[in-house]
Image (tube, rainbow, N blue to C red; front, top):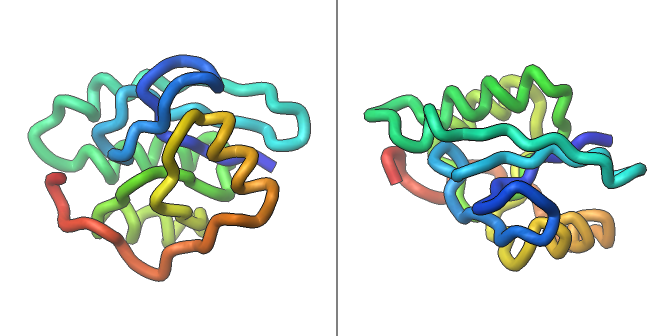
Length: 119
């Protein structure tokens, strides 16, 4: 299964970026093989508004089923929810740590955004 993890760097040893829409990178990981793809989120990171919605659209196109991040705003959450992508908030440590916690069943999925927009 494919999951997305917000990241400050471009590999599995990078720190999780706590922001979804304004994360530096989003890493798409196949949990079965640990093969990954890096999405450079630079255009969204510095956008005036709509960063979360655009970031959500970019992972929807990659057939992602779960997003692991620190914080997800209301517009992004609605977009992800509409695409049937579950959100696991409060991810921390490295991307690999977040993947390990997910595969061990330690993430609870959010029922709503956990931060106001434009965070």
